Length: 456
Ligand code: SF4
Image (cartoon, rainbow, N blue to C red; front, side, top):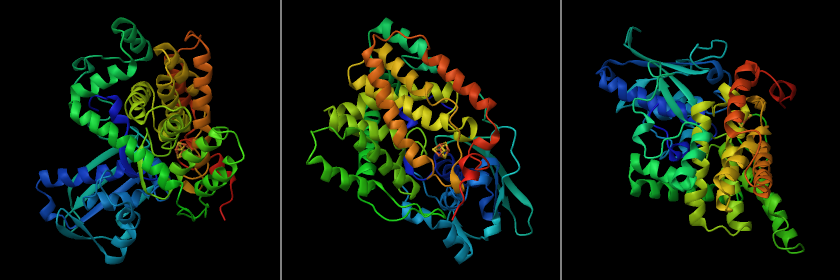
């Protein structure tokens, strides 16, 4: 993996899953690029894809097959038309072809094979792409791993150190303690250091434009989710709730004290995003899609009920949250398939708490404390999506975690920043808990709610 900056934890993409939709789409695009570079596309008569482990178990519910077809046909998560991605597999099966790099290649449903019982040793989210010639001989083959948050690594990259080291950054830090020491020694805020690090990689115009775009996409997603009604895709027939909640809150607000329904609105904001995500619409991976509602909801809450200027949310809030997110990505995991839901929703909750503490005037130690409290009470959270869909428990879980983030900030800002359990300790605990967690609770839908809820 290349250098990780606060900015890299947020990408505009599509739902419903960063590891099962966004990552596979990127992997499919990358396979086509490498196939062309290997000069094998012209001889390719068929492309076969095998999805292993968690991707095989919950890939259909998570839109993986659609994402792969869309990626093979050149779609990118940032720019694709979500409506077109949702129907990609159906279209390919109906027409019997996929268009890859300008070539029309025969396709049938069996060309994507689900192998949930085979887990490759490197990672649970593995996919193998094979290009075959007209008599079925293998021309070119690549295995990729979707390692969480939409990041993809090939088999010769996974587990390898970054090609560049963080020493190329002006403010390198590997853990929470180093981050706080840097704040002490420079007198800078976490957001300012995260900004300087991102600028060192991407340049100031790109960084500032991306921050604005990310917050704009997050806000738009909330606003869209508060409008859209109907039933979410998939076998569960889950009814969207955010729009109804918003109407109810608006009518109640007239009889209540201003701001007295802020917690209820916070939950509605998170549910709005996660319903958009479950519907396969445009969302920001933050740091994953399953947990995409928490950071936007808490930021929107801060604008609306804490009167934090949007510009501060689009800069200090996102950068602080992103800086904390890099610690999870680097030292534990943000992948439900690796660490369970504590890696997804727990990390997002901790990131949101850090960002909110920052824009409410917290010191670096109070920010670190808020992030620590938020993760501490998500430890052990399992991933068990019913029907392999990112709906139950995911949508409500984001609403609850948004509340946990805000409560963590209240506790942290009530103190002076000193606390017994460090953020680094809780991150390491999350990592170890993830290792100990049964595979049933790591995005395989073979345990927990996923097997105890009867689908009807
Ligand atoms: S239960 Fe958590 S980790 Fe699993 S899919 Fe839902 S949000 Fe993601």
